[in-house]
Amino acid sequence: MNTEKTRVLRALGLSVAGKYVTQLLAFASVVIVARLLTPAQIGEFSLAAAIVAVAYELRAFGVNFYIIQLDRLTDEAVRAATGVLYITSWSFGILLLAGASPAAGYFSVPVLRELLRPWCSYRQWRGRPGTAQYDAETRFRAPWPANLWTKSYGY
Image (cartoon, helix red, strand yellow):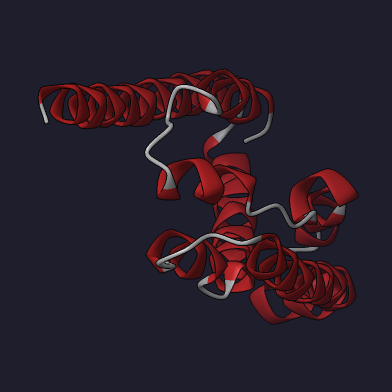
């Protein structure tokens, strides 16, 4: 019983530490971007980032929660969740690419088109419920370096 409690507390500590390090990196990137851009450019960038953030959260479609809440994690369940995630990811990536020009016209921000298109790349929209598997097994140590690298690499 004591080893299980220790394992859960360690997993919880790693999860919290990972979240705080990620938030610290995000804050540092915001500070750097704020120093490099003019106020008008910050507004344009923030609009593009907000559009992408909404689409990125919608594309997950609850797949990670599905994996975490499973009583028994099987290969079939992971494959099914990955399939759903691939379909929704690519759909939202294509929608974002197709909607870049109309969004630029709607918001009267011509540069929005050029800001949204790079976010439609494969790296941003690939579907991977991989870390949810570790979350379901309370093995937070395994994906922690990968999550840290991903968050520091791509805003």
